[in-house]
Length: 200
Image (cartoon, rainbow, N blue to C red):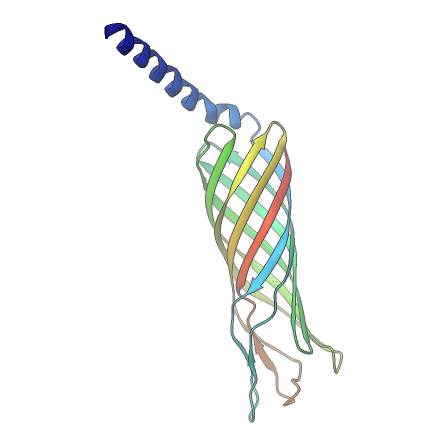
């Protein structure tokens, strides 16, 4: 019985040492660059500012591509991203360039690192009416909030990530199919990406 207890204690001690050492091994490479790609799922309800017969709608599922650079320091991480989003509805197309910086809370467990993140940024967006070729560009505030999981395979980073993107609405100087007034549009939504990166 004493021998079994001694073995159990030794095994528990070895496991604790391995778990304690895992974060330091994962953090040997603190910096990384990462390429993200996936879907953009708008959630904001939009309406044309028309005096008569206003149209309400939500933009359709679009795409999201981002390039990020960051650093991980134990439980904390920072990341800066620049990307390209696109979506459409009827005769309205929208493209945007999000520029964001986030702070991450990271939990390294061997080579698996789940994290939560929040940050701020700007969204430079262009709305285009394909029927009239009118287009209007605005720069608005945005705030990403989300999380993901990184898999650290030596210098290679693989991951999945989901973010809710709050994006302020603005008046775009394009006409709708029912009026010549400006359109008040919002592009808040959810992005879901697969990530691949290089750690250094």
